[in-house]
Image (cartoon, rainbow, N blue to C red; front, top):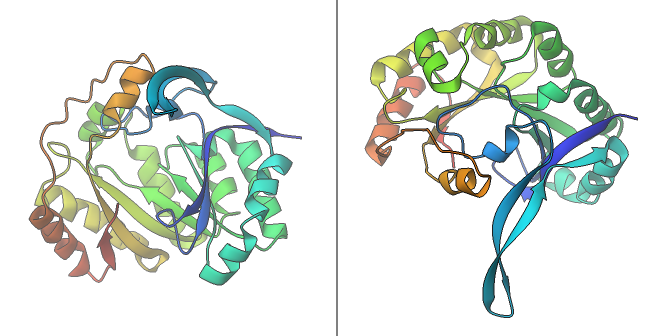
Length: 266
């Protein structure tokens, strides 16, 4: 039986797809986004992290392990506890990361088990995986949450450690073959927070057309910086500034005027 390396299982989630969901975070990522707020997802192995815990009114630092191996049956036992919530809310299970498609065998087994139990599935992906892997996984999911960071190859390479060719090719495949998708665009100061960048993303997405259920704009935040220190890693993001409300509204207008449903994400 396949085992998956998981660093968190979050129940009662409402931000990772429709309805009330259980989000399963798989460990391992092949991008190194400068703004990442889940650096504990990067390595494909368990690793130590420092955390501050409270006990009897006192705070103390402890070292814990991030990442645990689960069988698919063990994860399903957790998922099935909330089946009633999925049915009443139109929810289900979201597999996130890291990049969940890097654990292809485990993920496809989980998607098959969820299908057998008539549970809606979503996969949160950067799309930066080989075409064969992407098509195999995407064909089993009900919904994809698909990240688009920059339409520019150089900008993407400089800020994530990889180009975007494979990401855009996989996105194009969805047009005729894949499930519906929700596009997620992290809006990052100095990276893609320019009207021209957003218009270029809009033009790329127009090719995919009716497959896109919604576009979520996700303003940059600094919540990941402390995690780098706790993991013994150096934060090299160099991201300065914030994304204002008016800026997000102007970007939303770019997409809504092209006929897309768009909202500000959390």
